[in-house]
Image (tube, rainbow, N blue to C red; front, side, top):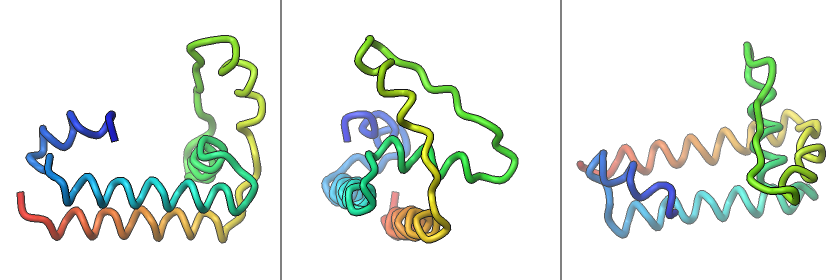
Length: 101
């Protein structure tokens, strides 16, 4: 939410309804990841790595603890999980598109 605020101000969508939609989307991704014994970074990077034409992701760390967890990010993501993430993000785009600027 904190990271989305500058972008939402830029596109003139910085108000409560939009924040609620983004929050619900974030929670949906967290629940989806947890239900499949994944972390959100594992789910997101796994889906990104399934993108046609994308051959890799460069992941950086800010401290030693984050650096130690980078190795656990590379997991196989099923077609069903990719479809679920796509459905969540499609709903987000739809809901945000329905809100007037």
